[in-house]
Amino acid sequence: MDHPLILNAEGVNKSFAGFKAITDLNFYLAEGELRTVIGPNGAGKTTFLDLITGRTKPDTGTITFGALTELVPLSEHEIVRLGVGRKFQTPTVYTDHTVFENLLLSLEGVRGVWGTLFSRTTSTDIDRIDEILKIINLGSRRTDLAGSLSHGQKQWLEIGMLLAQNSKLLLIDEPAAGMSDDETALTGELLLKLAGKHSIIVIEHDMVFVKQIATGRKVTVLHQGSVLCEGSVDAVQNDPRVIEVYLGRKKAA
Amino acid sequence: MTHSLLVRPIAKKEWTFTAVIAVFLIVVMPLMNYAGWISDFTINLWGKYLCYAMLAISVDLLWGYTGLLSLGQALFFTLGGYMMGMYLMRMIGDLGQYHKDMPDFLVFLGWERLPSFWVPFSSFSFAMVMMILVPGIVAYVFGWLAFRSRVRGVYFSILTQALTYGASLMFFRNDMLMGGNNGFTDFRFILGFDIRSPETKRGLFIITAMVLSATYVGLRCLTRSRFGLVQQAVRDSENRVLFSGYSSPNFKLFIFVLSAVIGSIGGALYVPQVGIINPSEMTTDKSLEAVVWVAVGGRGTLIGPIVGAISVNALKSWATRAYPDLWLLILGGMFIIVVLFLPKGIVGVPGMVKDWLKKRKRLSEPDVVTLEEPSKEEAA
Image (cartoon, one colour):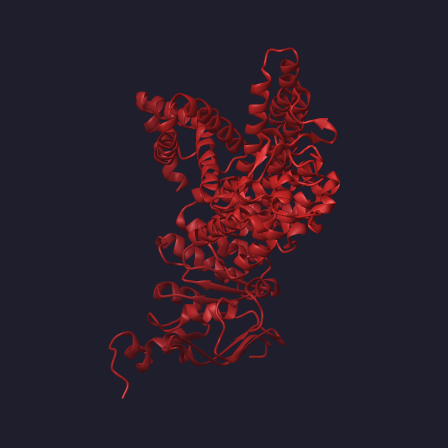
């Protein structure tokens, strides 16, 4: 691909009390790419996101964001401020705040204690929030408490919060989990709409959903903490190694 | 509205209501006392309640708004009290039993001259600065260590409890030179006024009411600003706050220091009104009591802690005279009742009654139910 890389992880290792969660992982993501990552339970998908976002630190290896920024020494909120946004597996929004307030707190800009003490909401802020509300289809719920939203709507709100943050790289962990079929399809459309403008990594199990968002794009299969194979959805689905790790778990010789 | 510092604007009606209550406390009650309709004893008692309200607000700012249950808030209240107490001890002058210009307990311990850290406390302004600095610094150091190492939930509560317990053990020691288990008492003057005269007590009550009102208004604005929204977001979902790019430890630290200072000011106002301060005020059960006031009044609101502190202490004043043996049972029972049946405390009762009436109305009008249901499905 001609696009420059936005994420470059090389030789990453991470073990927890002897258990190797990530082994010699190499992962490259081009700017504007929408990449789906699949893999059986325990393949290290969520740990991988934890490593990118600074939640845990790798034992060895480098993770570079954009051209030069090394992520490993940075703390979580510093990585976020660089433009890495994460959506959790279970929707994580501020349930006692309105939808509007959820987005307001996520808007790129003031983050410090003093800044927030004296920050005023400008009309640009409000316009931006309304724009995002349109994208995530929650315009009619603007003043409702986020806690009153349906499961799917909360997921969209959380994606909207990443947009408000102006994240360049969106890390999205199982967006379709617990959603109805309609909601899943809408989520897929939303992600496709965002691809190109943002670089996105989606972790997913639901193969119908994966087909929807990954057709014509690259899919990465993780297994035992490293990349098993990469390719189109069909190629990956027919790859004998992938079938083996998903269906029969033969002991490695 | 767009350019206000408050994300959640405050209605005019609420300002009026707040002003009415504040004027009642600051002006009307003292006038009634002056006219003889309220006894000096009562005004002094209410002055004490208002100091407790400061402590309760400081607990709720942490517990109700930030999700940090501090069981050591009495420490900061007492520290403020001790700072004021040191000033008041110096104001006794040579009117003590030993007729030396230093506190009696120091003479008793064999000190010929005033220990150096006592000297500047002859100045009221120095004592006032210390009322803010000492608890502020203690809270900053403790909070910095605790929040950096991500001490959360029940572990934070246990640590704060240990902190106040440790401090009380220190203050119980005579060689701390803070009066040991007797603490400070027998105060005579504050800023040249006789501390026992009804006029001084009325003045202290007015000042306390003013400070409490100002604290209430300030915090009401704070909790509705963007800062306040982040603070409450920390309570509801700290992970999301971190992943929105906020450094939640910094926010928690700020709130922890702020509530330490608020508690301390409450304690500093408390000591001249009750005339005594000793380390038993610092023990963990005092902190726990403050938590009960907040729970009873209504956690997560600012009016709740004030209502809770006043009502529980008014009940205590009555019960400890009428049924002295039963007080702790009453207190515990109240806590259980509130936890089980009144999750929003006393101030939540009107809302609960409203909801209950609405429900009853809906049940008695079946037509409304059938009309409402399809629209609900649509929304989902």
